[in-house]
Image (cartoon, rainbow, N blue to C red; front, top):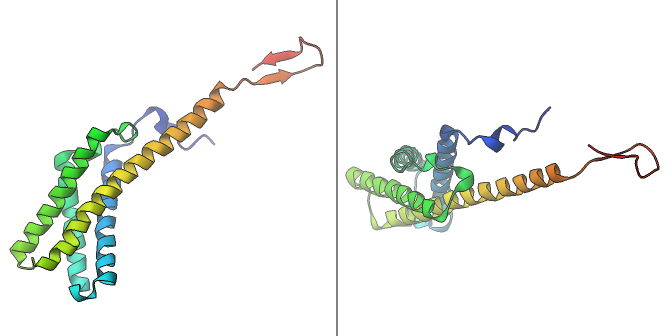
Length: 167
């Protein structure tokens, strides 16, 4: 059985997989914001129906913003600081679309910013943290893989000086 990560050493992750991962991180951030608001701000009066609608729109707008700003086409293991601006604008675009949706539906209140602003911040931070961790784990894995391949293997088949062979 080979190394399960060997196929990703020379190839890149598929863009659809990266998009799916970013989508999951964005919706997870929105869910965490709702849980925090529900626990720490009980006067916000958040019901389950509104939460599911918000999460559905969050998923839809995240997909749209990631598609528009092409965050999923970045090479994950070579992510740089300048690439974080795409995440900033895609997170901001998602929250602006959510705010516009609330305004059209008529549910935009001053309390809405208790959800929109933390959603933007948490989505941005989790996206950047996830990319940072992927780069970190990839570098650690490559370092161990490179270190293993540079080791010399010796075959000892006797007790004299000429009974050593490098494999």
